[in-house]
Every structure is written in C-alpha cells, then in structure tokens.
Image 1 (tube, rainbow, N blue to C red):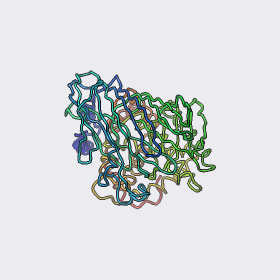
Image 2: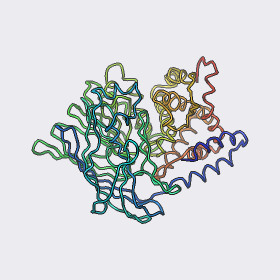
Image 3: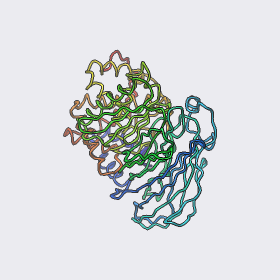
Image 4: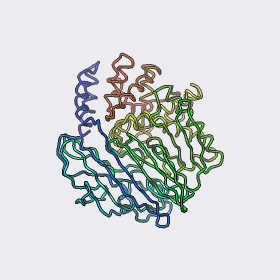
Length: 504
C-alpha cells in the first residue's frame, strides 16, 4: 500500500501508452500479490463483558489467540486501542461541524483503563503508543508461524455521545472497542494501523473467530455481529452469548427501548430490525429483505446467516459491520422512508463488497464504498424500474459532477485525505459514476457478473486490490478493462467543465 501513489501515477502514463494495459497489469499484480501474506489460520477472540450501568462502563476480559502470519519472529504485537480517542479532546477525529451533533451532551473524558496484560498466562510489558495513545504495544516471544494467547483486563468508560463508542438515549454502541491486532507487513517488518475516520470504515485488521459473553441488567435487547446463541436471565440480570466466525470486526449495541421486528429471506437469512419508532420497523424489514434477496440473486449467498439493523444514536448516517448496520433515529421517522431505504441498500451491498470481499478500508475505500453506492442504485432500479433509477442518479450525481473539489483528490485517493463532505462528493457519487460508465460500456449483465467474480475472489480471506476488480471484469466479459477504468477513475472530474442537461 505504500507504493499506491507511485502505482497510480504509472497507471495514468501506461494507460495512455498501452492500449491493452498488459505491462501495467503484470506490474500491479506482482506488487499486490506480495503486499500481504495469505493466511489459512485465524486468530480467535473471547470477550467476557459486564455492563456497569451506574458507572456507564464495561468491565472486559479479553483473551486473544494470536497467530504470527509472517516468516519473522516477533517480540511484540501492536494493537488498536481506539477507545482512547475519547481520553482527550484533541484526539477526536471529528471536524468542527460534526462535534455538536456527535457530542450532544458536551465533551467529557472517557476511554480505556487497562489493568494488565498477560502473554501465555504471565504478566508482560506493554505501553500505549502514538501522540494520542491510540495503539498498544504488548511484548511477546513468538516464532514465525507460532501462536500465543494475550489476556487483557480493562474497563471501558463511555461518554454520552453519538460516536462509534458511546451511550445515548436509544442505545449503547460498541465498535472497535476491544484490542485489535494490526496487520503485520512482512516487507517493512511493522504493523499497519490506521487512524479513526468519521466518514467511512477504517479498522484494518485480519479475520478472527469471536465468542462473546455480555451481562446486562434485565430489559435490554441486543443487536450484534454474528448469532445470539443464548440469553440466560437471573437475579435481575441477563447473560447474552454471541458467536461469529471469520469476520474482520465485531460490533454490537444494546438498549431498553427497542421493539424487535423479524423476518426471513427466501434462502433462510434471518433479518431483524430493532427500533423504537412506531411503524418504521416493518418498512425497514421489508426493504432489507428485498435488498438481501436481490443481492443473493446477483452475487450469491448472503455473507452472514443473520442480518440485523439497529436504530442508533450514531448521527453521521450508516455504519456497517458484518451482519449488522446502525441507522440513526432520524432515518426511521416520517418522511425519511426513501433515505432509509437507500441507506439499507448501501448497507446490504457493503456486506458483500468491503466486508466479505475485503479491501483495505482506507487506502482502497472506493473498492467498497463506490461499488456499494452504485449497487444501491442498481437495487433501486431492480425494484422500481429504469425511470426511477434515472431520476435518482440525476438528482444525486449531477451536482457532485459539477463541483470543484480542491486538492487534486480522485475517486481512488486514500479516505484519510478527505473530510466528510468531499468524501461524499468524490468517492461515493463520482465513484458511482465511474461504475455507471463501466456498466454503459460492458452492459449490466457484464458488470453484475464481474462484481460477482470480484466477491468470489474474496472468499479465500485475502485482501482484494484494484487489479482484482480489473481481473474480475476481464474474466466476466472476455475483454480488457484496465485502461478504461483507469481513465475514468482519474478523469471523472472532467465533468466539471461540461454542461449536463440529463445524465443517463
């Protein structure tokens, strides 16, 4: 990924010089193949948690079996400690316009209180790293291919807020709340860790199996990644047990005010909606079931056996995790049915592209977000027809095509370079236009077949790249699409100089 900017410069030059793009394909493929090691074994994470309602905190014991994926011996593993973002105001990832809706109760310190770290049963040295202490380095002695068990004992303090960790009127929400090992890059012999972002997914990590036990006061309902395997009441408290296999992230939320709506797709995927807005649950359930069934027809079996949609006080729109998405309360209210349906369609698409067919979530965000954005409009077209589709893309895309965005940012730029507004313009909307131009050139069936192949490439657990998308389109159509796609991702901004009466 460090070679990405150089590669993209080469892409522009070579796309002009080489009609077939053969040299570029070979070069990029060679670089991407050695970027990250393939992994046949997975880490496993066991979380035992108790919610301390009066203290607005969780006591967490985490046991992580970590497998060294490299040929290098390791004397330490570096973990995300994203909860520490809330320890000091200067560490917050939000821009000025986002602070008020996110921190509706004002800022108050929260974060991680770490009591100790063990490695294979023995206390080990550890220390927080980075200017804002968002990462934790824990010592170990680990041979190439070997494994060890880390154990963390900590309290997670939550503030009243609408952030990715926090407590609100509707829910307590938890994502990136446990210690997550970074991805080890054998080329540079270091762990790759990303900074939190407000406008897209950012947690770059390997797949793992999760076993989670959560003790709550009675009266709460839980939505989570994976399956709820058991709920055991007793003495005014309830113990929830959850399990998820082969996922990159585990997230959950819980609240007292939920009403639950449940359905099932034709293939047997269980769909649940948790909301307290009267009349909204059935609408959300119908929209989700319809989107899942259509995507299964296009791309194959849904990646998870359960799919949950939870109303959340998270205010910045949809946030997606394997088998779980959060939607803000406003989307469930009257007059927002169309917007909610669009966000649901996007969330369903991202279960395939970005979560199952995994891509590096910051440097290659467009491979998830632009693709999922376009698929969400294809789902609208499938449900309501071409006229409705064309009206929607002209309403939503034309203004983005006409805006000048400073900084030379393109659809493929690293998500960390954007603010929330410019990310929506460039990556989501202009990125969708790139996919639409590809569809116009190869036909809808060719595009859908290529996307299905792209998703299937991710079933072996590796991180997919831009050249995997090109290879999938080539295989689906028998053509060569690299030069075409490269030209569009770098030059879609040329539309700013054109008059657009009707975009189709």
